[in-house]
Length: 428
Image 1: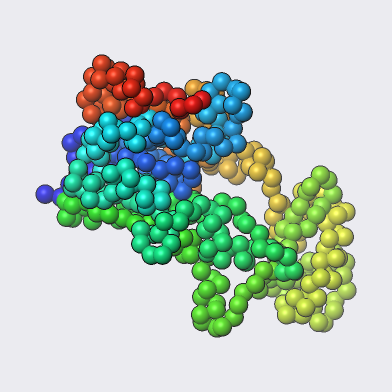
Image 2: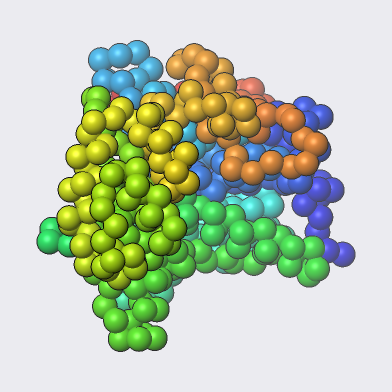
């Protein structure tokens, strides 16, 4: 009969095991998470937030590299627990360490595969081959398991073995080509590709699980980062293929609005952004700025031709106002405008606060701090999305190896003594 991710024996753990977690859509699903850095952990964060029991596996000698990014210096105790991106993308997971390069770890990994519904990784293709955990190995260990692989460029093709990360994708997809001033170089957008790839991988994984319900068989899912990003950045390619038009960098200006841009206000690095999308809005803006009614500026094409001159008037006006008063005046005139918000100010944003988007998480080392929740809600559900803090390195070794695999305390102790598992990364 078709396997059920909810009722399948050995996969009944639902995150923290609370009634709220058990009520989530993916309660009862177990995900074996070999991902690292951003795109893969973003995918498994979402699966965990929806109720899956996500077991994050890190190498003893090669932990998730995001542990060492933008945190504390090595002179601080437990400095590897402070990586900001690691904290942001690894809540709702249990964490174990397992040195997969050691032969003794391979049967443990296969046993974890056998006890899981989903196996997911985002290494370059050669890594899983070296570890003996490619699709044939996973399928042999568990015919009902879905394996989601997230290579940068794919499991085949001439670029198969190239490594990739956000900045690579931003070049390969054309994003960087389209970002920057018209007379300046391409600019790297810095990171937008990873969560896009993670969302695509989650969608593909859920589809594969639905198919498993019908057939009882797992399947291999390939979700490449570059193709996920091209789903978002395809405008330039479509424009050229349809019309022969090569889109180019235009700074903050676009084809549908004029004037459009970011304008500095009085105060310390204070800015507003606005976009005039029709002639009525232009008339209101012109009156607010005290500009004469010039016939050539009554159309968007005329305003685009005079954009530099309009920008000078706008910049002079905004420089005389603080950001909030400028936004208030423009909104009163029904001109589309928004303050350019520094990231630190988002934590106090009244709209996000009212919706409870940032959720406090109590971490054993970092303490209680806010993390972004999920960008959606379920009707009548008020429970927090983030039920478990990001795991400490090897925090759940004993719990997972004992509960899932049935290893005794003595067996786990022997693995610790041999360095197959550990409670701290090697060399720190």
